[in-house]
Structures are given as structure tokens and as C-alpha cells.
Image (cartoon, rainbow, N blue to C red):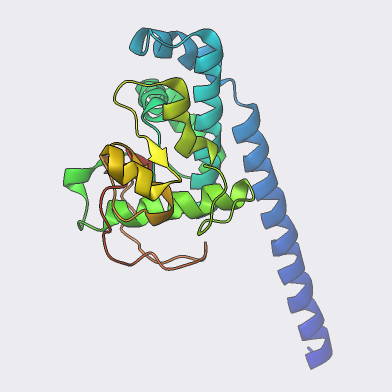
Amino acid sequence: MPIGALLFTLALALLLVYVWRKRQVAGRQDFIDNYAYARHLDARLAMRRPELDAAQRARVLAGLVDYFHLCNQAGRRMVSMPSQAVDDAWHEFILFTRQYDQFCRKAFGRFLHHTPAEAMSSPTQASNGLKRAWRLACAREGINPREPERLPRLFALDAALGLSGGFLYSLNCLAAGQTGTGYCASHIGCGGGCSGDSGSSSGSDGGSDGGGDGGGCGGGCGGD
């Protein structure tokens, strides 16, 4: 085959792969957005968190959608969970084992795992996952991650709900330090309860996943 024809064929193949990939990503995003979460989870969440009314539970399920989008964008890189309320909803979803498995295959092309902190491969794994969650959530909502003017929805939700045992984040690091409550959102440096099991600390979502642990930062469970 002449070199020109070979290059044309290769370029066409790459273009077709690119178009297929774009359609696959768009299809997964639409699936995550349009899945009937409330049908499976609203009643279960009401039993788990009876202090939340219907409108508040709807906000939690919207936060779960946000979190799944972050996981989809991160690929197999671990993303920690910054909201206890959304983590509660995720736990309830996992209990519907068949439905959850089917959801994961269509939303991510794989099963989204859940791993507790004590099972992580290193002490910094949860830290890296929460930093990634912060960057991706800020990018999704057009927030400067280094100089945020507001918290992304996932990081603001527990405080907005007044959730007992929730993760509370503050934009005012000095105020957070003075009161002894809450986490400094713009200086996230450690992870929390549990996370996904990818074990990878590198990625293309911007910034480094390394760095020192600058005090508490909250965070709950996560996915890879």
C-alpha cells in the first residue's frame, strides 16, 4: 500500500476511534444524569436519615450524581467522598447489588469499588483521592481550586443540611482553626474514612497528588 494511502487509513481509523470515544463519554454522562436514583434510594435514605425531608433527600441524590460524574471523569483514579450524606446514599445503592452492578457497567464501564481506609495501600491514598475530588468538583463548577469563592456542592452539602456527623468545610481557614470545627477546604491535605482501590496517584486531572498532610481535611468513602 502506498505510504499516502496508509497514512490516510491510519488517520481515518484514529478519527473513528475519537468519535466513538466522544459518543461513549456522552452516553455515560447522559446515563448518570438520567438514572432513576430516587426509585431505589429515596425510601432507604429516609430510613437511614429520618431527619432529612424529601427536598433535602433530593439534594443528597443530586450530590450522588455529582460524585458519579467525578468518578467517571477520573477514570480508574480514586476519588474520595467529601459528603457523609452522599456516602450514606451510595451505601444504600450498593445494597441493590444487581442494579448497582448494572449501573456501574453502563456509567463507568466497570464496577465502582468501595474500600475502607484501613484497607488502603498507603496513608496518603485517601489524601490524594480527596485532593482529586476537590480539583474535579471545582473544575465542574467553574471554581478556582486555590482561591475558591464558594465551596463545590459536594463539599458544602453536609453543612447546608446540618447533618449530624457530616463533613464540614470552611473557606475561612483561620475561622475554622479558631472554632476547632470544620476543615479548611483550600488546604486539603488528608483523607477520611474510605476510598476506592485503584492505588494510582498520578493522573491528568491537573496538579500533583502528592504533598504533605496539612492537618485535617475530612472526606469519607470513595471510588476508583
